[in-house]
Image 1 (cartoon, helix red, strand yellow):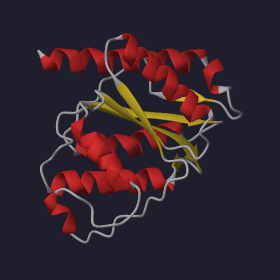
Image 2 (image 1 turned 180 degrees about the vertical axis):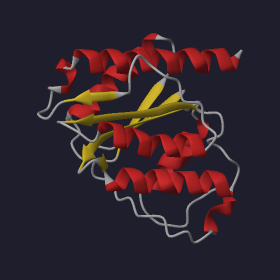
Image 3 (image 1 turned 135 degrees about the vertical axis):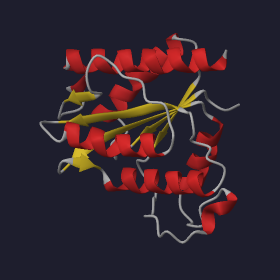
Length: 189
């Protein structure tokens, strides 16, 4: 059975801050009655889009670990992407994955259209807002519904566990998760 919300963790560290923040987000979604699945890019092989145009049949022609993620996402009502910030932007494999997911959706059946979700970014000091803006382009260009929160979905932390100590950031992420669940529930009626 497909999850209601697919959470994509773009961190190479399975127990790092991004994974911990997404776990807290997932707990709120589940408390609100939705099923979730977290997919980690840690240890996966994600190639960059080549704009080959062969994805019109609904599958990417590149042979790596993204095909299975696309199939899981196709069935979900929500999609949340969490990424650490590297040099002021999202990690390269995160943007590669999103570009290819968007290309497959656009070239085939627009499966991303009207899914609910958005980005969450985690960094030690800076680059949060630039990364949020970068990732929002993916959600908005793919006709997705992005709920707000009480601030931008960004959390500060460097060492594993530090992000959970960012009270305002975690409060913002939890409210965002509540809003994702609220919208999915309302749209189903």
